[in-house]
Image (cartoon, rainbow, N blue to C red):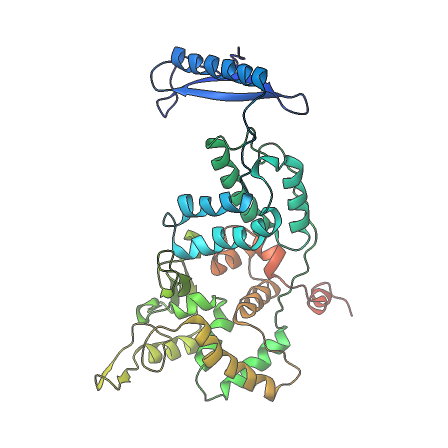
Length: 387
């Protein structure tokens, strides 16, 4: 009836006895195996297998059952999101790690295909196509979602074999870096401009340039994160996420991406003095007609936490526009590109790689080497002693 290889008379961790049986062949002549489970005993599991095989034999004799209705990939993918991910992870993790890869990449590619018709070769072609445009980290998220979706389909007996199992070739095409970084000369001129700039946002940009923290981490800073040891204690970030229950956007401050992002960054005495002054400056509330120290170091005019996108439009871009107007040959970079700039300059200054990783909050040098470091031929020429 079945191949006893892999079968056991002892129950699994779930408490189920399992019996694996060969129940037929697919269109390529390969064996189709199916597991049968029982809470009672191993014998009961084998009995279920026997009955199943007999029923299949009867169906073949009388002409077989009507064809099962196709289950579209997009239907199953959204069911997986709802049942296994929504509410089980943080809202920002749900959106970035699961919802976006599924809705933006997997459903447009596989959406109208019958889940049972998707093969191993289709998955490989998908990885090939995505790797030509997206980073290895992005395709890794897509594949992880695929594995989750097909694992659910296999558990629900919607497919006979999981196409995400087995070996895959992970193509590594060169995806051009679309980010930019300031050279040392450009960086120095931006600092020189900021020294004479009197408008709001000056301190915001200075912190980004000198520490390499992200926009989220900047807006999550609180007065107590400016330590007496002249360090910035990075413990949380400010992000906007879509509430999985209401569908509405909300601002949250609930930690960092991972444990490596928790770090202390030394700062110079001048920047420390500016941050301490900002931390001790009260804000007058027009409604309560009282002054108070805001909860966040970088805050709205009325002392509330910034929506990151509003901060970019109302604070960051005006500063950069003024800088560009004064220095037309220096481009306007995004806040994230200032993080690229700081990482690149630290490397060019000869800071040990292990220290750069700690300061930026990375677990290894892969992010630095593949995404954040921007090669400068002039820096290489000087280090090589060439004229």
